[in-house]
Length: 83
Image 1 (cartoon, rainbow, N blue to C red):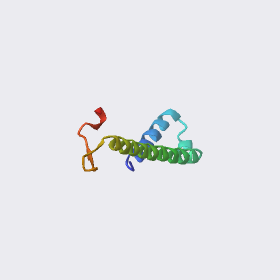
Image 2 (cartoon, helix red, strand yellow):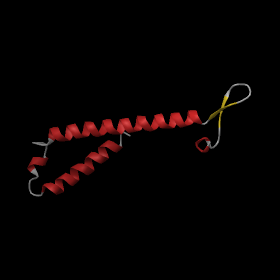
Image 3 (tube, helix red, strand yellow):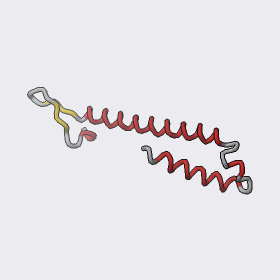
Image 4 (spheres, one colour):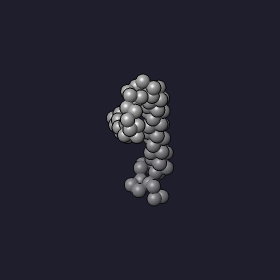
């Protein structure tokens, strides 16, 4: 997760340079620095929340796959998502 955010930011910055054309001076953190800081923080929050959501889905599906044995202990089924 931490390595994905800088890669996406670099890709977006490079694509932004090519869209600016001759006005590269404004790209050099003069005017758009605040916009990139806000976008970078929003992107990292989005990636973190997506990671947390995926962990929660994995936890819930793992709970659904548990079966109670005769001695009242839980065991995991092999294909719990098919049950």
